[in-house]
Amino acid sequence: MSGNAKAIFEKGERAPAEYFTGTAWIKLLVPNDPILNVQIGKVVFEPGARNNWHTHPGGQILIVTDGVGYYQEKGKSIQIIRKGDVINIAPDVVHWHGASPDREMTHLAINSNTQNGVVVWQQPVTDEEYKR
Ligand code: MN
Image (cartoon, rainbow, N blue to C red; front, side, top):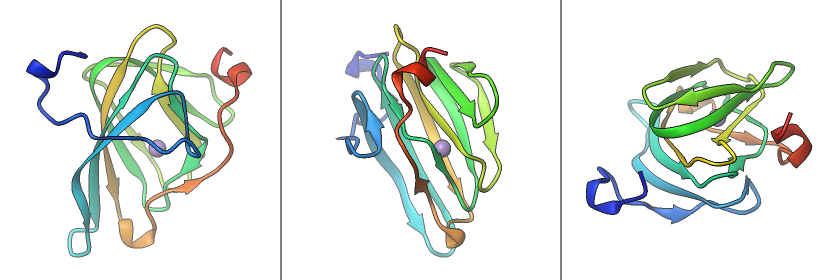
């Protein structure tokens, strides 16, 4: 959904180019809480946008709230993810997530066990990897 009139949350800030390919927007909903050890953000990926390969030392849960996107773990095929899908990502699993080539995708990202670290970034997902 690109119409802001029906959006639940603000669009947020442009995602940093060093960790994202294409245009994405991040709205931090729950800043890292040192008692609960959780951080929650909303990310909107415009068509073709994705984040770099990365890991979460404390794991991550993605809840797709709109659109159609891609999720891939290293060594596995790309999975198509859609509104309503929930993805549990175990600690230290190398992966990336983003939009599909023609559709925007929005997800909530719940970063758990943040006392172990939130994210460790790696290299960008190349066009060749994205189109595979
Ligand atoms: Mn992730």
